[in-house]
Length: 295
Image (cartoon, rainbow, N blue to C red; front, side, top):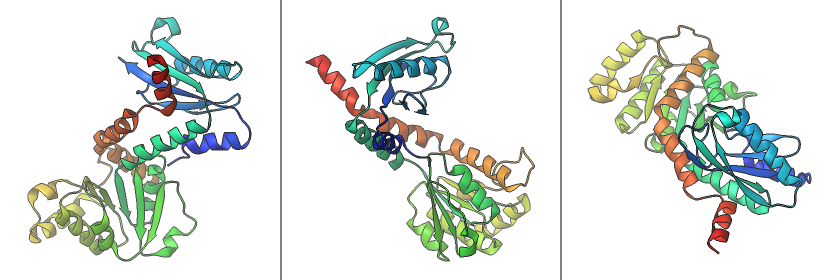
């Protein structure tokens, strides 16, 4: 994953840079982002996004004006229609606040809750495609483990949010994975691919099981799985080849991009749920604002 807003804000404070946080308090109708979407604004830069376009440009200008004033926070109602040159048609309420130490704590707590709901992706095989897939998944909301017994395959490879695991104990990795995890199998050995896939199928609680290869490989594997007593229903859930068959391009980066899109699609509901849970509890300053209204 990329650097979180909490760490970015901490870095701003370390250099004495004033910053404002902009939060979508509510979103009704068609809007660019959901409630809870956040960005940080300083005089020189913007991190995060509340949806882009003219709507975001207005919010950035308002945040910078707040930093030059003696105001600590304000709300802003924005109808997303012709009045601001957008055609979404929804309505957004923003909180714009001067960031302080409590903002870092609120952001860090928010990010921790959201990360806790990320799906787990286990990639078996750190060859060209495995590393390309790990790189493609790195900025996305997943917890990724790249697993291979060949230490040399990891030489010089790092990706934010990806845990490199050098081990020959692939079965132990399958056993330790949480329910509903995704398994992407692309080792250097077809027999090892089959062993790992069998272990995943025997668990029967996987969210996704993808095996790199051809349709011929799939047919051979399916026959072997049936002989092992794996149910037809579970065998039917296997994705092989990975990345779909619409694009016939075997370059590692292309396969990785297609497989990443496949995983995003498979886990869309879970990712939305994680985001919703993270946004159930309002940010710290928002709670303070609500309490002031009651008072």
